[in-house]
Image 1 (cartoon, rainbow, N blue to C red):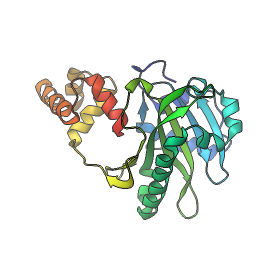
Image 2 (image 1 turned 90 degrees about the horizontal axis):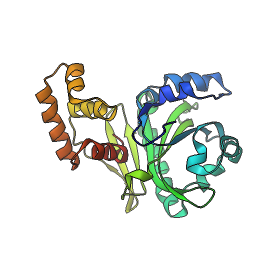
Image 3 (image 1 turned 60 degrees about the vertical axis):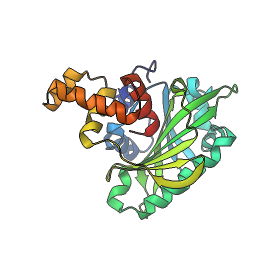
Image 4 (image 1 turned 45 degrees about the vertical axis):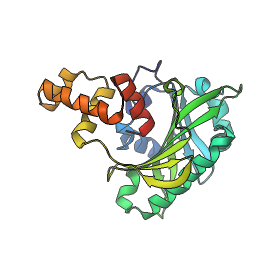
Length: 258
C-alpha cells in the first residue's frame, strides 16, 4: 500500500487501487461506503483482511502481506482464522483477548445506531514466518452485523509501525466515533479505562490536517482562520502531546488512535 513511513494514504483510495475480489457484493458496498473506512489513514507498509468471526474464516486479503507476515496473500487466505491467533507473539495475546472481550461488552451496551461507529485498535508485536518480529497497529472495523446487531464481519487493517519505536506495547483502544469517547486496555491493567480527551474539536481538526500533509498556511486557508491562529493551535497541540515537532506528533497520533 504505502511505500514508506512518510507516505499517508486514505484507505478508500487504497482499496480502489487494489486488485481484489469480494465474494459477497454487500461486503464490497459496505467496505467502500463505510463512514469509518472513509476517514481512516495509515502510514507504513500495510495489508487488509476481511474476517468472518461466525465461520472463523478470511473473506479477502489485499496489500503487502509478504513484508509484514512472510506469507503471500494466497497463503494467508488459506490459514483462515488461525492466522489471527498465530500472528501476535504469545506474550501479547492476553492483552489482545482482553481488548476483544471489553470491546464486545461495550458494543452490546451501546445504542444500535452507534455500533457501526465503534472500532478497535490493537498494538502488539507479531512474528513473521521467518521468526522476525514486527510491531503492528491492527485496526478492526465492523462491516456486517447479525440479527442481534452484533458485528461478525470485520475489516482488519494491519500496519507495520516498528519505525515508531513504541514503548507502550501491547495495548488496545476502543473508539466510539459517535460519542468521541476512547477507552484503553493496557497490558499492566487489563480493565477498560476511559481515556481523557485533551484536545479540543478545533485542535483535532488541525491534527487531522497536519497528519495528511497540510502546511499551516494551507490549514489557515482551508479553515478560514488566520495563519497566526493556526500557529498558536499547533504550539498548544505539541505541548499537550508532549512532543516537539510534527513528526513526533504523527507518532503520538498513531499510538493513541487519533
